[in-house]
Each structure stands twice: as C-alpha cells, then as structure tokens.
Image (cartoon, rainbow, N blue to C red):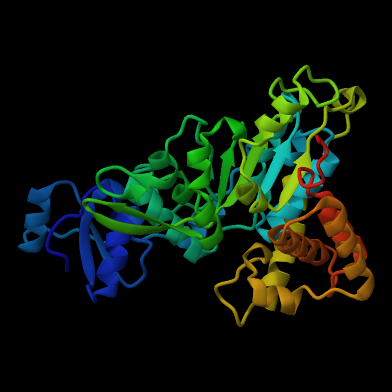
Length: 398
C-alpha cells in the first residue's frame, strides 16, 4: 500500500506508475480518487487529510476503496451541444472535414470573415471516432499533470478541442515554464488543435510545430530537466484569404500585400497540412431555408467505418493508426496507383508545381477518400478530389 497521499494533480500518472512498480494500493485526495481508480488492479483509498491517512495506515479507521465503472463513464461522456446539422450550406467544406476526420489529416480553412470557419472547426471533434480506453488514459494523464480535470472527473472521455489565441508564445503552444509542463499541442493529444487567424501567429511559434506535426511528440528541455510529451493531434487552422479579409478579386490589397500575407505561413509548414479548403460566403437561400444539414452522428458513422478499415489494414503496424501517419514504405505498399491515376497525378505535379511532400499528402488523402467509398484501390476519381483539396498549392491567388 502506498505510504502517503498523492498531490491533487497528477493522480492518474502516479497511479499508473504505482501499478507498474507492483504496488497494490495508494492513498489519494478524496476529490481526485475517481481519476486514480480507473487503473485496474489497484486499490484507491480516498482520504480527506494527512491525519485521516495516518489513521487508516495505523488501522484505526477503515476506508473502502473507490470503484469506477469505466464503461458507464464513456456512455455518459458524449457531448451533444454541437452538431453539424446546425451548419447550413458549406457542403464542400463539410465533405473536406469528413475526409480529414476519417484519415486524421490536418486541414486549413480559407475564407472571408463570417463564412463559418470557426463554427465548422468546432464541430470537427463531434465526427471523430470515440476515444479508446488507452487513448482516454493517455489524454487524461496529460490533463491531470496540468490540473485541468474537474473534481471527481475520472477520465477525459471526449476528444480534446484546444484553441489557443494567436498571441500564444512558444512555451504556451509547445510547453515549458521552469519545470517542463505540457503545452497546447500536448493538451490536444488525440484531439483537435484549432489555430484561428493562422497568419497572425508569430512565424517563430508556427515553425516550432513542424517537428511535433511529423513525429507526434514534443521534447522540452529546461534547467530542471528534459521531458517528452505526446502530441498526436489533428491541426485545424483558419485564415482570411487576404489582409482585409476579402476574396482577392474584391480586395483592396495589392498582389504584393496578398503574397506577403500568405507568406507568413512557411512552405514547409503548409506542406504538412494535408487539405487546403476554401470556405465561401453562404448563399441567402441556404441561410433562409428550412433544410438542416446532415447530423454529426451520421457523418461520424461513416468516419468510424473508414477508420476501422485503416486499423484492419495496419493491424501488423500498431504505430500507424490512420492514413495521415503513413510513412514512405507504407505509401508505396498501400497507395499504389494504376496507369490512368499515375498520369493524372503527374500532370497535376507539373501544372501546379507540387513539392515531393505535397505528392505524399495527396496520396494519403486519396487513400482516405477511397476508404470512405469502401474501395480497395485508389482510382482517378479519388485522386482528383484529393488534388482539389490543395487550394493554396493550386495558386488560386497568384
């Protein structure tokens, strides 16, 4: 049995470590007992103070261990406050978000103010597959370290949605302080990191994200030590098409000003965003009509089926959980193209001057589109839709 109370934060990480070290039980603050109790095979004793802990250890009082029904927690953990059915119009954008969710792809939404970019982004988490128990434990550990769990909360059962302000610092985004602590990209682990007004972020801050986006983890070095935190998140970014927010053909900004504005986002970072999608103004008949959009539940059902196809395909490669995580070897194995598809991609590469990294991104997105269609192989139709999802590469504002 553990010999002392745990701090109010970090109960789950310490409980997991205690179990790994062969401990049979621990004492924790009563208000955080449910968090530690999700670890199977470990007795969690809730205490109000150190005096009560000492009395329990001396056998003067008895305190029953806390028990948690994990399945019940997941059943009650779904949030129905947001739904894609509330979004009128923007069917092409919804389709792109469905593709992003199905393959775990990063996505950039480009459009004037008031077109619903933020509204759409906030609903992405509602169509992602439910957290598995292992994912929930990983996510809860990070939130526990930072002290974000509510009193009595045992697990994080919904995929995180983090939306830092564009004034966020390197430390705020990646993590830091005197003692290394997780930043926003780790708090978004297994969820969504939404960066609104992307060009307004400091370029140095955005550049620090390149390695975590590739590796799914971030290493923070400080005088107190070095820590590595997981950061497998979906990046969802939004931006205006020009400095004044208008479409290029309506903007008063000069071509040079528009290019300088877009140039705040480096090519290497842009290459790591799989889908670039235009969000146009919604037409009056769509806003004023009674017709509602497709529900998040209906979209999520297709997303889950597509993810299941991917998990089955990658069963012998446990580190790959979705198409966005495919490496060069897996791309060659799982994204083979027939002659007509090869010719289509070759022409697109030449016409739009795609980079090698963009070539890989298009293949990954095409693989996801094929999975949504239930197709074994990628065909020209899947590839064509994937190419259409690279707006900035197609130089629409040149």
